[in-house]
Amino acid sequence: MKKIIIIDGGPRKTFNTVSMQQKIAEGAASVSSEIEVKTIRLYDMQYRGCMSCCT
Image (cartoon, rainbow, N blue to C red; front, side, top):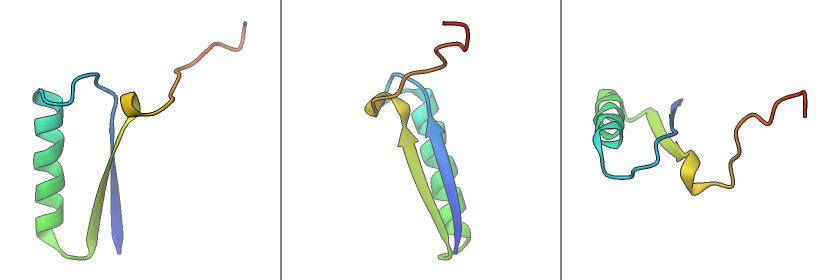
């Protein structure tokens, strides 16, 4: 089984980036039933970016 993870860092759930990611996921999944595609949305998580080593 091959796995593909798409990481979405965009704030909007319905705009161009999400549309493009969905098409990529559909295309990859259509190649083989052995391919699993998962999308992770950073804005749906308790995610914080780099806080800098200097703080």
